[in-house]
Amino acid sequence: MDPLFEFLCRMGDNTLVLGHRLSEWCGKAPVLEEDIALANTALDLIGQTQMWLTYAGEVEGKGRDADRLAYFRDPYDFRCCLLVQQPNGDFGYTMMRQFLFDCYHLCLLDMLATGKGAGAPHRANPSSDQRIAEIAAKAVKEVTYQQERSADLVIRLGDGTEESHIRMQRALDALWPLTRDMAALDQVDHAMAEADVIADPGALASLWEYMARNVLAEATLIPPDVSHFQKGGKTGQMHSEHLGHLLAVMQSLPRSHPNASW
Amino acid sequence: MVATLRDTSAIWAWLDEVPDPEIPVISVVDLGIVRKVAWAGDTLEVTLTPTYSGCPATSVIEISVETALRARGIEMLTLKRQIAPAWTTDWLTDKGRAKLREYGIAPPNPAGGPETCPHCGDTAVERISQFGSTPCKAQWRCTECLEPFDYFKCI
Image 1 (tube, rainbow over the protein chains, first blue to last red):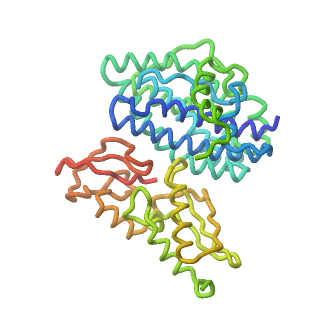
Image 2: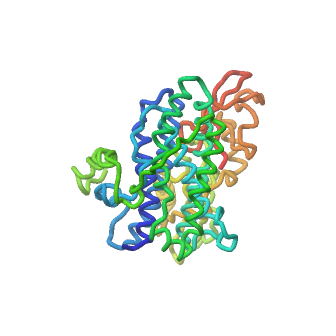
Image 3: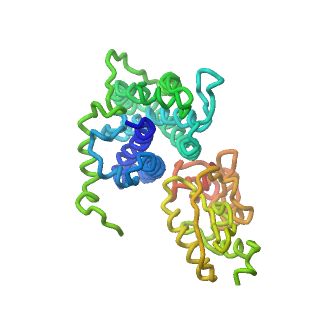
């Protein structure tokens, strides 16, 4: 296993799967403005996917492009975290999922683009892999905007009506146990840190959680006391049952008509 | 023909006639996505940068640029797509900003929102949504003339 390929698949699979989930809202969101916002966020994420998976294919060197990786891998070859696989639920649930991922995603991209967040100052450098630093610098602008929006909505709905508060707390209770999968460290992260591809992956868990907890407090929402956090999405060892269903929908067209072009 | 074009200013002028496919009042040069025009031997190299990662207009823009230059007799042409440095709305030209306003789209503003309503010029404006009809725009409205309008997001 090439750790760089693995790392790039993690980046691209997170944005691909969340982008697909958000696109499921198209034409169905509670109001037109939110419908458009969700579709635009999906578009940003799919655009980022294209950059990550194109590079992943080049690193792998087996002639697979972004489409090939997106449409012709099976669930166990995906490296997306458990959080992004979760079904949309109601609008509040979707925004809570978005917010939790946005916080992690923003800290991660910022670290790749600039080195920001590294515990030891001498490690605080942009990714040693220039292509990764460039993609992250592009994506971080879009994700900054997305995180502003999801944080704003979490506050408005969490500290909103009695009903919206109940639903947001319920969403947080359901999604929080899946969040430690995102920044759990394994040998891929260690190899990437060793090569200075990422400055300090060990610092990400506390960075994103700090960012999230501040907003949640303002939203009058309380992260549940959890004794067991589910993991296995990021490594691909134990995906949720939802991923296979999502891929079945997403991949059915290209698999029914392989090599079709239009 | 080629010899007279070694100076790329004519090529920049041609590109300034290529409209953005989604906001046709401004050109691809106004949008700041043409980063470089240079000759490599007999081949013209045009470097473009995407606005947003997923903007579907990027491919259409590449086709429009190629079509426009071929129509002017450029046969040897390479289009390069470059993502770094990342596109910023600071690269919009002053001419482009003026045209946007005239068209009814408030130009980007580092302060984070439109300065004035592009319809009546009043400063009493409020945000409806952070996103709009294309990835590069947000929806705002004027509380004076009550008209909604697009705001070109500042990134």
